[in-house]
Image 1 (cartoon, one colour):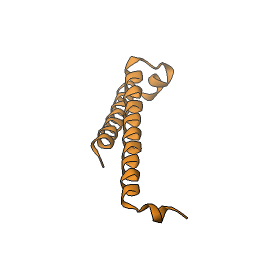
Image 2 (cartoon, rainbow, N blue to C red):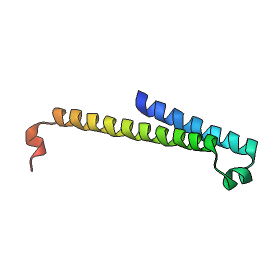
Image 3 (cartoon, helix red, strand yellow):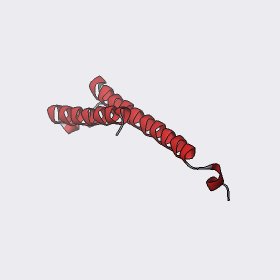
Image 4 (cartoon, rainbow, N blue to C red):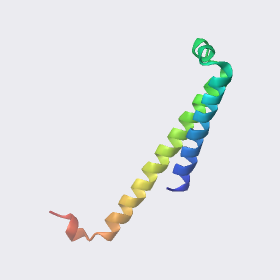
Length: 79
């Protein structure tokens, strides 16, 4: 896994763990009644982690595809 995917995965994991810890602290009923700023920030952290991870995966796939096309001869790509 590249740096971007690792960072995204770590941010997602931290966000989920913080959300669960905060949920246990406040009680799940309180969170369901009113979403406050802390819950919103934690949800944003999870979403940012997902975006970073997805962007990293897409960039890695693009680079790998580009490298693969360079390695394969043009004659092999034609039908």
